[in-house]
Amino acid sequence: MGGPLSGMSMDPKARKQALELVTYGLYVVGTRRGDQKHAVMVNWLTQASFDPPLVALALMKDALSTEMVLASGDFSVNVPAADQLEFAKTFIKRPRHEGNRLGGYEFYTKTTGAPIFKDALAFVECKVVAKVDHGDHLIFVAEVVDAGVHREGGPLALRGTKMHYAG
Ligand SMILES: Cc1cc2nc3c(=O)[nH]c(=O)nc-3n(C[C@H](O)[C@H](O)[C@H](O)COP(=O)(O)O)c2cc1C
Image 1 (cartoon, rainbow, N blue to C red):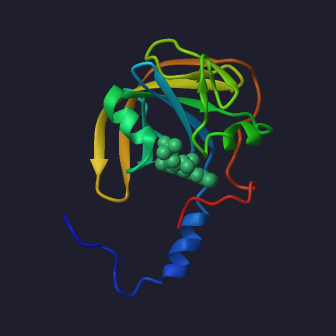
Image 2 (image 1 turned 90 degrees about the vertical axis):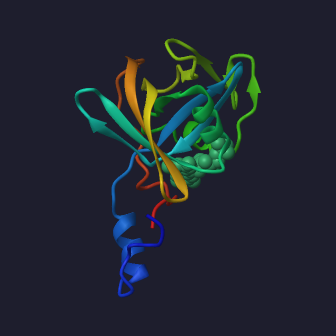
Image 3 (image 1 turned 90 degrees about the horizontal axis):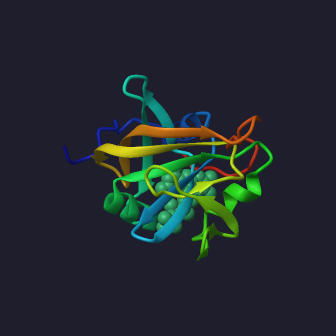
């Protein structure tokens, strides 16, 4: 593989603008390594297959969460409600882990051992089935092995938060 495939003529401003127009949600990905639990806010996450049910998640290569997913082979995806931006933002910086709380938010574990936040609208638990190692993020392809809905509501979106993670 190797060098960049992008043409010399590509306008970097247009690339950034176009990629920032992609619509994203915001999610809290829960990870574990032994008894250690961690969670991180992400937007680069999507469903990627119906059968089997797969998701694709891109995690920064030097992130603690990446190390932990590589070690455990699983993670949870927690979907915050539209009014839970503060909850989601807690997980941009490494949250403090105390007992059954991360960043002050209570979690429980179910099938994989990855933390599941009861405050979130819903969750899926995933087991890694493949990895793509090409850019500065590692892309995990993972099968959904459990799921739950805590309450009804609309999900949090990246657009409108004034934050960006694209370009
Ligand atoms: C708007 C926004 C979106 C983000 N999306 C991702 C993402 O998709 N993947 C990722 O690895 N980090 C993402 N981050 C950065 C993480 O929240 C986190 O700061 C970083 O991954 C460090 O994680 P660590 O605590 O596991 O080391 C995003 C940050 C912001 C502000």
